[in-house]
Length: 219
Image 1 (cartoon, rainbow, N blue to C red):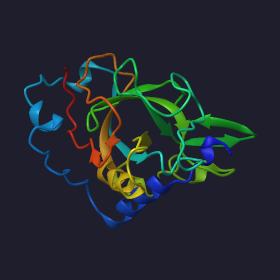
Image 2 (image 1 turned 135 degrees about the vertical axis):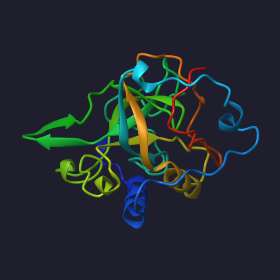
Image 3 (image 1 turned 45 degrees about the vertical axis):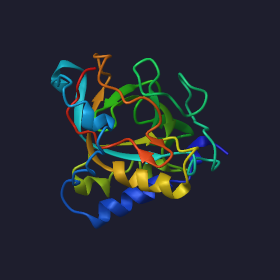
C-alpha cells in the first residue's frame, strides 16, 4: 500500500479541534521545571525576517508510528534524506514532514516540493518534506490539501509533522497530536542554520516536546 494512503487519525484529531474551538489556539501547558522550554529562556531571540519566508498561519498537525500506513511503520512516500520517517530535528538531520497533494491526469503533485526545508519554533525543530498527507484518488478534496475546515481558524497552509512514537502508546500519540495541533509559525527555506533545537522525536515515551512558542531563537 502506498504511503500516501495513510490513515489520517492525527488529522481527525485536528479536525475535531478545528470544529470544536473558535479563535486562535490557546497556550500550551506550562513546561515542567528543568524542561528545555523552561530552561532556555536566555537564548537570543531572532527576528523571523532575518531568515526565509515566514508563514504565521500554518495549521500544524502530527502523525506517527501508530497511524502511518501500514500502522506500526515508518514508511514514507517521497524519501529525500531518509528512507523512512525520522530525523533528529537539526539542520543536517531535519524531521520528516508531510504536506497535502493533488492528483491530476495520473500525476501526483505535492503542495511543497520534496526536500523543502522549514523550521517550526513551536516544536524547536527543522523539518523536511518527505511524505504526502491525504489518501484516495482525489487527495485534493480532503486534508491536508483542502483547508476548508482549518481555514476557519485562519490557516493558509497545512503541515503534518512526524512525531515518532514507536516507544509510546497509541493514546499517548493521539494526545501529543492534539497538543501540537493549531495555527503556528513556520519558517520556509530558513537561511539560519542554528535555530534552537530540541533534538529527538516530538513524542518520546509519554513526553510530548511541543509548545515552545512562536518566536525563533538561536542556540
